[in-house]
Image (cartoon, rainbow, N blue to C red; front, side):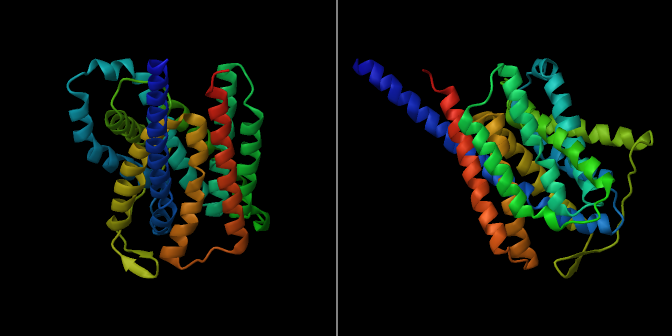
Length: 319
């Protein structure tokens, strides 16, 4: 009896530790991803194409993570062969497609609406998990989905956005598909070290963009002109460094760890906090103070995330 209690206590402690690691990694990842819009917008305005920005961003991030990724691999090259399908999906769809589509979307629609469209991908994640498990999500999970989406809509306030370009909507929906693949693939159990998986996956995404540019499927334009950022003129390479090191290398690596510990559904809803972080970055860097409606929407969004977390926990609890 005592041994059983000790074992149960040990299991609970391990579960709590996993949750703490997962939530911490996912939240920091969301904060890092939240910087991408503010740093990419000046580059796009100065003549860079979305494909070129993403290629440099993913490519530099892959280089930064490559050495620690190879060290973590420890010469087990067969693992790369065993995981080539998730690596290809992660790089081509979760990396290249999601990012290129989002940056293209914000050239035609406001960034807020672009984020809203991209995060519709979490509905695809919930649907995929339900179909794969051949059972409907719990009532609490479904309520959490509805509440979180409601909060997201309030935060982004798309009601006042008129004259929307259908090209922006199409790119935004494509970004949603890429985001869904990112969360689903990242949640797969695998023996490949996280740093190795992310570095190789981002390398695959970079190569995919370059091939698309070479064959003429995607414009690759760059500029060495200075960019205007938060009212200050900066060299063109500075936003790229931030996008590569913070909004890509750190964001993707921590995001992968978060999904591995939380699962695709919970992690995707924690990822919704990227919107809140984006608002916070705009406040800190651009002096754009969020309104009362945005604050209320943020609280509702977080309540929805908490409901999804509890709903998923109840589904996994035996009995």
